[in-house]
Image (tube, rainbow over all chains, first blue to last red; front, top):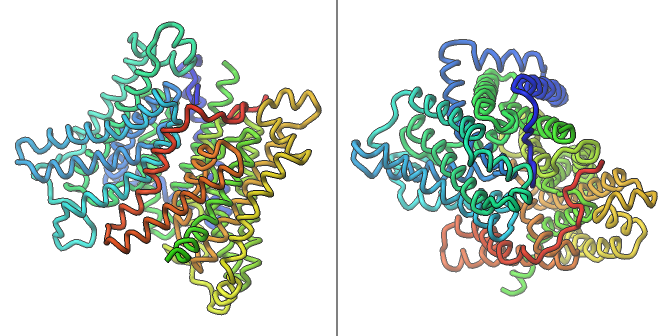
Length: 335
Length: 290
């Protein structure tokens, strides 16, 4: 899909305003949906906010939810800049996480983390390279191919982990405990923030960044101007896959200390909402990731209190995507 | 064994046929339909809810079609009244439908994974009606020539195709492109809803994520069949056969579950990769209306 959901004219201030507008509209629609499902929207909102920011522990948990969303969000945002829709972030991050978990469990502590990170980049990158190549050189629409690859990734991961499964008295297939883990959130959070800002810098200030934006806005013109569109598409999807893989690795190493089957509650799909809400900029993704992380974290708390089921968060997420898509289309017609 | 395999194929093919015919209807009018998964979910949930409420599978079917049509209506309105990207909205709708069905499941039935099963009398009625396969299977098979005939030989079908190829030209001839597209999407919802209803009736309840990727497989079938109902149906049945076959082989050869789960998708991917250069979609597919 050319153009996708990314405007290129409005100023940063205008963009922020539209983002807030999108968020507000989404909240409104979600309130209606929640009410229709028989729950009190105000109570729901209050519970979510309390659950997300109400205490130091809540804030920590919110940030913990946000970190993988920053990385996965970038994994959706980058291809979006080139006019592609990476629906495959979920599969990429699950397989990346799997690779990281297996590597970290099998190697001595000194090399465990770097090896795990490398493994995640390679495997995630490969899972992004497949649809990238299919789109770049065979014209297969990346939406269908990434969706299919997501559907392949889950049983594939299940197959692999069962071969390597050390049943440490658990019901859930998981790898051995990693020999070294990340003990704090801050390294990953800092890395995510740096990556997001570096992405912005690259996009706005480098020649290749400009080329990428050109491919997204006007692929045929870019081709005529001599840019290697196919190669760009392939690279973008591969890098996106690698970054998504890193998101998976972060979860595995940071949150759980090992690969656990089903560790991702749909980060890859929330990432779509993050990328759209963040309107394709690194800073936007960063902020949107925190917003969505807050939403998810708040929703868990809300579910635990019995106010409304946690799926309400996913519902809001879906509404956010819809509203953001409409807003983006409105921008496209205006520019 | 051949009979069993054939029966299994038809059973698996039923929802795929409904969904892919729905996909053809929508896409020939120019609306990329990634929402098929959502329509299936809505259809299945509606059918389960309707059957549980009244004990009648027929009412369930109607409820399923109604629910799916409603979801399709929302989808269609967004796609025709705004210039939002069809693909993004379809994906969003799938996420929404998945979450919403689970949310309603929890609120209305107080269960986390699936609705309560249908009462035994209803189940008996359902299997009793399945004389040579469920009546819905026969309807699904009939739907193929019906859709083909509709598109090729009726005025409404011609208008639909015209809007799918060149909406501006159709408008200049007095066709209301937005209304045609909306109608096509709602029809797609209704047809696909029957597929969803079949899923629920066959299983005797609704369980979460019931659509299981069938909506995407159906869309792949539409692409592979080059948007022509007959070929799309062949692709859908081929997928169904593949799934039934791998289930059977899995039992025979003790292969792990996951291999059978992956196989239809891997094959679909391979076929799509081999084909696509030569596929010509409706010219205005995915293009928003002015």
